[in-house]
Amino acid sequence: MRKKTLDAAEADAAQRLRNIWNEKKITLRLTQDKAADALGFSTQATVSQYLNGNIPLNTEATLKFAALLGVKPEDIRPDLAELMNYVRQTGTHVQDYSAAGWRLLKPEEAELVTLYERLPASEKERHLSELKEKTLEFDRLFEELLAARKQ
Image 1 (cartoon, rainbow, N blue to C red):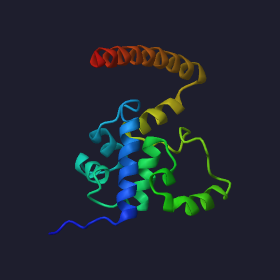
Image 2: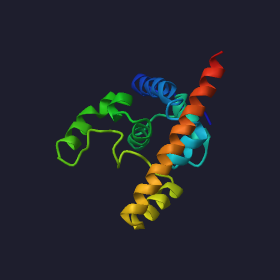
Image 3: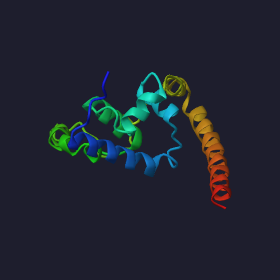
Image 4: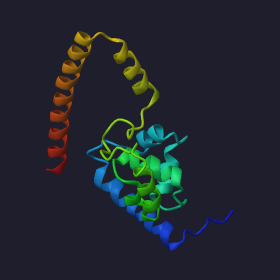
């Protein structure tokens, strides 16, 4: 089977996706495996195929990658700007791409949310406080690792 050659717009979209991926993968702590899991792809190879421009980005894949990377879909595919502007005019759109609804949850993350919602307010506050402390510690360790890697 011969590989389909991407047209200029598809190749540009793949390059934009790759640039955004390279810019954000470290801060988002993404690997292709993690992305495949979050995006609902069966393997990391699918992520690689999109990033390397081996398969064209359809609208669904573009929306998924945009949500994962926290960018507007038209940052990846400018041809979606008109459609996205129409969606935004409906009044249900949230401009903050880090807001709930833009983040794809893995099954275990969705389970955590469900369990959290069942807790009384005082327990929610306690668990959030503990998680914030742990996250700060992991962020500090991550920064140390990055600094050591640059040396």
